[in-house]
Amino acid sequence: MAKKSQKKEPISAGEFWYNVGAKVRRVWHDLNDGNQEKKDIEGKKIVGIDGKPIKDKENADNYAHSITDAKIAQRGADEALIAGTIGVLKEGYDVVTKVFRGDNVKQVFKDGYKDMKNNLRGLKWGLQNPNGDAEKYFAQLDLKKNEIVEGHNNGIADGKRAMALAMRQEYQLAQSKVDVAKAEQSARARIEQAKGTGVSYGVAPKTDKKSAPRKSQKATNYTAPKQATR
Image 1: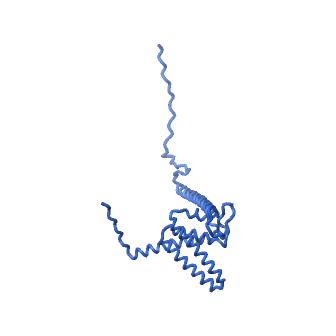
Image 2: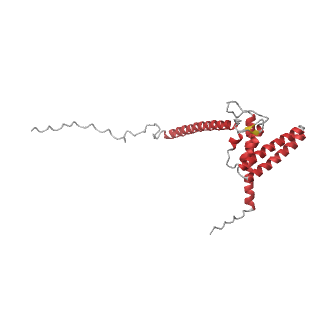
Image 3: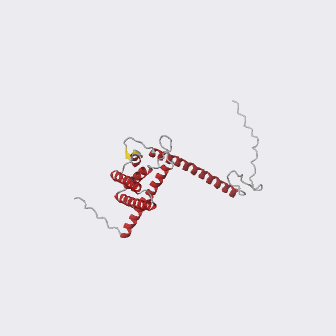
């Protein structure tokens, strides 16, 4: 007989909103990371495969919006919906702010449309490829054309890997220096504690001459018996 599927117990309202809040916080954190990645591209902080810094201030958004939303959507439809909603609200806020600031209305709407297009491209790919390699896929994004070109390499993924490796090496070096400094500090402290007690760390133990054991007397001369002649 086939086993009856067990019904999941309904979660409480408190637990539901806690889960929603946790997902919103995670998505918000990822969006901030994506914004930082955009700034890194704009500020020449990512070096491409040719060894030259990648700088594309006008088109950095194309990459950052797409890959950030793609990675979020790979975790499921719930977080994709949250990211999409935040994206719409942000672009709406930007449009209103820029228009009232006196920016060119046509350019403002053009930029907003482009950002939403990038968001939706990333969300769609992430939902369709939950186990895909987003870094590898969006390395094919031609930043200026703003389209995926098979075989193209914008160099950003390679640059990020190189930067991550360099940072990890720097961290390990710093950590080893910290460990050495801690070891030296600990050793000095124990040597200070050992002073006057004569315990280890190269401090010769102090002994009371009176209580010190006497040196063993030299062995007396011993003459072996002559072998008997036959």
